[in-house]
Length: 493
Image (cartoon, rainbow, N blue to C red):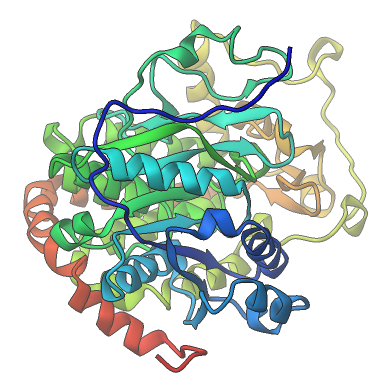
């Protein structure tokens, strides 16, 4: 048997042959960018609909100064443009791509992360599929795991409207599907239609008609910008399709640790902004309760920097939407500067860079820390909180950590049983010293409950304020002012 050829066919009329602005937002990922630009240059068929390739460079290691840039610039035949701007986060970079696509009269903007590897055929498929849609539709690609390339990390995602938690698959899907173990034919759930709320901006194509109607990204730096935009578009009548057969390889979430540290500020604030804008439940449903539980977990896990960032997020939420644009270039340095006050946020390359481990504790019956069951959870938590708040710290743990904890074992129910611990980061490239501090726990718990109470009290007014400001803060004019204040285009535009 010989394979001769194949073609895509559709019983529909092509709505248009749309032009695409392909935009990559980057921050010091020059090697990734050069590699992807080289791939594009080697596959001109993928650029047939592409009017312009824009790299929004927000880093200090400039793509235009990297080895190989001149070569890829020539290969792209005049389609490449570099825009230098201050670090405005993913939302600022992708909003710039949206803005430029509208300005150059493209029909679509294709948003791509920097830490991906492009599959050129996917670009062609997104463009043609979008052209055949009967009305403007956001079309996105899936995410394969860059470090485990047979694994489809996520096919399409939805938002839990009650908890408003991290990204999760549609209930009819699975995450982390390994094609090396089960191929497409042997995976029935992939053969059904599945609707999504949004597509991550690792690869998402948005019609500029949609941008003109509903605006650009929220000015929130990072986290929840792509989710909010997809849901906002859906509310305006523009659906999102995560298109089978289109994808990029991307560093998956299992290789990151973005719920602790400085990123926790943005996760928390932007999650609440999303709720104020889109939650169908009074007072955000279960969001407030869930957030208080997360604070408790971080507190008893000695992650005080994370909790302080979450409290700062609530304080900024209370200030309203008017200052979001002004905070874009300044908030990250402020949050990172806070890390100097917390030992668990200060990293060294190796466990050997810290004092040796010593512990006076004898494991109960020779066993390590066990997971509390559902029956024992509440009394276990109460006992742990009392210990965290009221029991003094052992003298030996002040000068020597009591244990070593690998990142994958850094669970709240485990770490909370020690007075101090050395904990590795998600990448395994560094470690930090967690130290229990009862006075810090009391301070953060008191401050957190106070600020959550204020958010709850002001929720109706905040909801009205954020919803009323949405059109303005996502407008072309508002973003243009931010870009003008933070840009230095290499090409002088």
